[in-house]
Length: 66
Image (cartoon, rainbow, N blue to C red):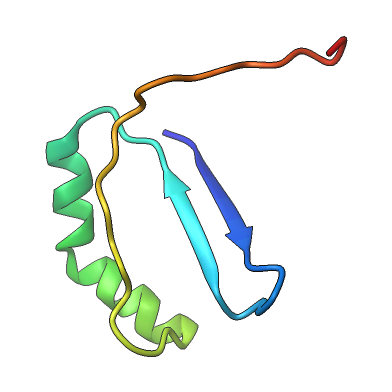
């Protein structure tokens, strides 16, 4: 599993986290977990987060030579 954190260039308090999962079932279980709710509360998340489940339709990988 990997993850990436993106910050909005207009508002650094607005962030997007993209997490890779080996199964949709495990991702849904994590989203529904009390551990995640507690971590968001501890981190000061305000409001309800927007959570979406996406699948990779097309990937382009670039090398350092590009």
